[in-house]
Length: 309
Image (tube, rainbow, N blue to C red):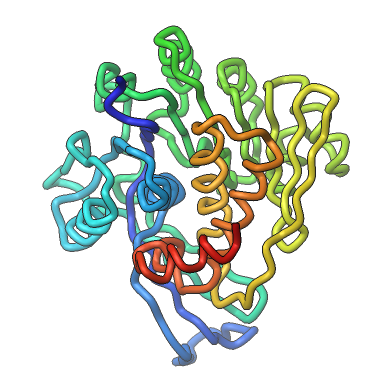
């Protein structure tokens, strides 16, 4: 019996979300937001928190500063049921922060990396993250300390019998170097959105991108926002429509999709049911501000999941 269902190594920071901003941010002006939320951020931490909220046993490895933002982030993960024994605190560093400027239907994301870049192989106890049936890696391009060693880490975990998923997320430099291809040799499930899939595959066509990526990994799952999601395994393609809800905030919806998909996947669900579970979890996330708030309210979360079975 392994200690965890899923282990995750990655970034841990907060999101400061400002809502109702003007479409144009004029220089030298004091501009007003209509609302704000300080919440648990970062792709890795949102996936970890929401997987635990869904009932998975989750172990988490990260680096944070010994500061108030680090305190809040760690408390949120602990309260969500995530094991944080392997989170390293550095008194000489600051925990990262993303400021999300929400302008109606689009947004800017401004990130101060802080300790995001600090996670390196020496921080990772292989025995700890191997005490699981599955390992998940998010934000490949943001993990600057871990990225050069990612393929080797995934190879070692594969040798220890774990299945592996990867959500590449965005490349802040918009370069999309092909070093991810070496890591993909050890990945079982790749979880990009449509833009990321096309960027990694080097094509403008989502169909071509999915076909190319499906030749590199066993399962490709592409998040399509309001259009739902698709998956391809070999030559077989599956689609699942979005779960329709009144959206409050799209922040963290893709990470929540990952949590829903993986929770079902690790319980032996077929791809169609995994896609549906991902869409429901992503939809749940959008009904509250931030990527984890809808999952923190257990009564609300359970009622929503029950009504969307």
